Image (tube, rainbow, N blue to C red; front, top):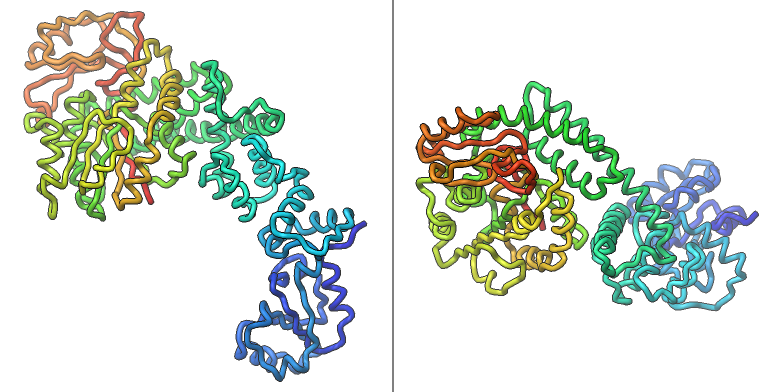
Length: 593
């Protein structure tokens, strides 16, 4: 059986003779717990920092029968000569234990690896007089993980090594990081943060690979390669277990909250969005069946519809400068946030399920910190009303100006802002434009989510296809660069939506288009209450009649129940305008530096 890697250090203690040992410890070996436990009880230890502390230690223990060990980290630091002359001097260093290896490299590896390195070092009869840093890294990687770092030429081989390292420790030694970066693999910075970040990135790459493969395309990482066979199975197992845990917790939270005395609808909306997102990543394998999901959706919808029809108008009174509740107060909230330069980015049609898609994409590209909140959109959840409230900072639709005028006029009234400081862009491309930095406050609307929703012609009781298409479309944008550039330029970046979307099915109701003021699949707007009531009274299925004079004036709204839409019975779609929790409660996110 091989000796412990630090046995030679303990041998020096055993063969020492003086009552005072002064040990040079440049590699801080004295801090390693395994070594501390093996130091005989006959010694008492002092870690030298300054002369005063040393002399207090000596004064306190001079009458003790125990021998003294004084560890000093550097021979170059001042040390009292009267003690140094009388002490027996020893040297504890990695260089003395592993002659020929670069001690600077060894220091970057966790001490728990030293025993394995030592075993291989002795077994291989390693006898090189000295090696440079790269040669030491090559040797240690081979000893620890059986991989020749210098022969890695593909992304798959790099991932194989990193997966082995993260299986053993929480960080990748800095010199391996630097070597990997020098090889110009397309490895994002976020994966160096730790095991969780690496695994999140790896899972996201695996999901993209599967999506690309399902479209008969090639992906930049081949998870079918020999190097990634084991990793592929591990991902499937670990991802599945992690998602199961999240889904279980989300289900428990939603079910307990639905029947509590005070329902946190923002909390439910977030958990429901996460649950739907995870379900649609892999609905064939995830541990929630379609019937269970639809039954819970029905429970949420029945309770939420009653709440929102009766109490949506009450939410406006809950806003304050520090508590944002409704979409019409977003601009006022942003106004009083710290910072002079601000960006309000509106993803048209983004609910929480879509936010989790976007967040996942941002995280895998190194944008990882967010403050995630929620707000109520306007009723009906149609673009003209809810986006108007967002960019006008006003709930009453009679006071809404066109979005660009409303935004510029509102922001230019803030202290130290003028119209020349403000820019509004609708239907913006997700590309970076240098002129953005010429403005102190920007309102930008992007349609990537809404366009994706309208691309889906057959919803089939889920947003799975929409989610897959959105993930592909995000890769074609410069969204990551946009966020990085704005953050680097000192902007406070806020993300929100005008409304969410919901998969829905036709209720086979015929609409007299000449009587309806504005028609959408999920809401009918009537200019007069008598017309709305006439339609409401005559229809054979249950509908909601809604009025809010403080927002809509004399208009009345007819909403379908549940996931119905005003269309032919067999039709399905992803749409908006109604009162489902996915449409009404939308994300409000601050991107943190």
